[in-house]
Image (tube, rainbow, N blue to C red; front, side):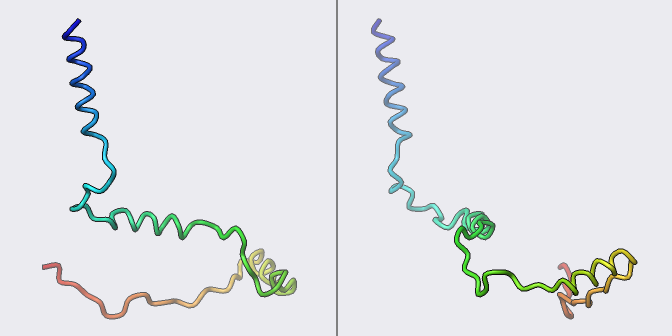
Length: 92
């Protein structure tokens, strides 16, 4: 019976060492995981968006022309956009 009590007391003492209030984390970087939090926040939809107009502006004529071009396989090609200019690396 006494060994059972010692085992319980020892395990309670070990578990007490796991408890922390967070104040002992002096050397830990507090910005760790910030990129993940920022990415998550960027994907959250605004639950109450504010728009300048009640209905989004659109043109049925432009939409019909776009559908017609799609069906005839004459879709307008987008302009080429350069994302890098003259950047090189030697890798050394």
